[in-house]
Image (cartoon, rainbow, N blue to C red; front, side):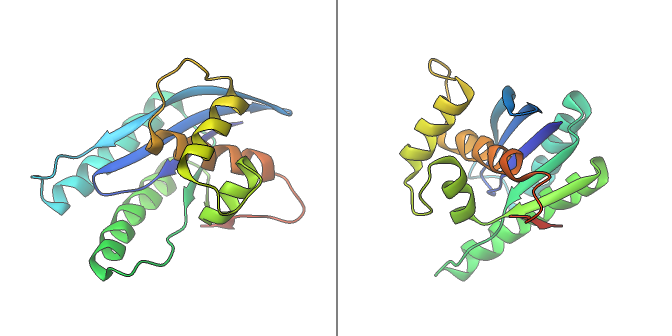
Length: 165
């Protein structure tokens, strides 16, 4: 099974693809869809859609997993993140059979063993789990791979940890 994990953001949407074969996980590709600060929000959303569409055409994932939105004090930040997540979910629904949403705490618990883990801890464990010790791995792509790992750990479980979108 090929899983595409997505960590949405208007300016830096992380992605991570991995293959799951039984209990074995193999990283396929990871990176970030970057949008410059001077681009309008609508242009950023279009570029996120195009980037994810191109990834699905190139790598043909079987399913996708995205991080659920959590609480933000700043309403505009929450709105922009919701827009980016909406574009990602729609793009995935058009391209793959199944899309799942996972809470940030669930992802951290699956990858690090602690729901309140810091970004550095997530990066370290993603490197360890996938054997990416010398590879360049940004925080955004590590988060996306962590979401894919979380889905891989919970896929087929009788008690689903993620929400089917």
